[in-house]
Length: 423
Image 1 (cartoon, rainbow, N blue to C red):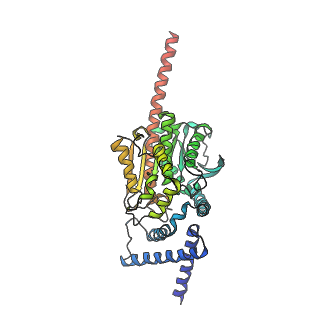
Image 2 (cartoon, rainbow, N blue to C red):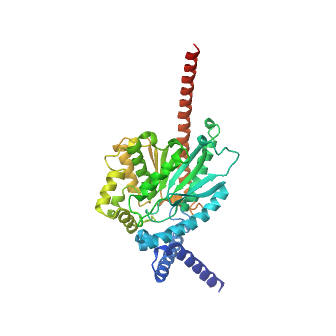
């Protein structure tokens, strides 16, 4: 009797959890309950498969809780994923991700010693994540680096606040690595700036690109940062916006206005081809073909907009030489739906354009944006974040050496000038 009651309680709890988690994809209460039933069936199958394997994980890096969660997410994206670009559903998911991300973020910031500050710029809320003051002079802009993060979500859903946990973990990881390098003396403070942008379907292409570009200008002019004090980062469609921003900066302002580098997590590379990719083998990824087709058509709905995007923003276009961009770190999961696109990007950069500062970091048995999962669900997420932090720290240390050499050269020139005047 007790076992039966406990089983009923677990089923009710799981039903409520998944109902809240995936309600944004449903149009009616009946659809919500129907989806919940399918999700529970998938969860039961995951438990059954786990038992059939002798209580061993599907992949060595996957805890059972992660296997269960991804099974549930796959049901959702395969059933109603195409609704992500519909305004009613997108607005719900944005608000839901804002609340969930803020709750997770508050805990992460408390644990790692960061503060959260929203700031309104151009009618949108963006988010600052700063290390709590520890006697550091806040007016000293030279000892500061900012990770400018552009969130994904299919250009339509999610809030920048959803990635607070990830961004403070990345910034904290970079600061720990920098503190170990004796050449830096006093290591720079690493803050994160989570960029917001207008979304489809309310604001069609290229509104999102324009907003991200404008926020880079905000950091340069309002925050008085130098380009080499800014590190771009983004996931999924946000990573594509990062790439587009790099191309625009290079074509408009030349290399002097480019940031220190970029970290891309599971990037969308060819938006114009998303509606055609039916043969992608990603059985264990949380993304689905119907979801990605909807994203592609929602962002670039016509042949004309797709051609415009290719000429203006596609890193795969022959007119864009990727060797002229700053160092780029591309991280992707071995099970990711977007793995083929990431490989195409690296082929274009390294093989065709002969770029020497691009790196790809493929993680076997990992699905899309695995670093965005909480560490208590997927401990391996910390491995991916650590790789990103190592890349960022290397760039900062390298830039510090360049700055010191330039300072020495400048001092020598001043000393020589003073000597000639005295003579």
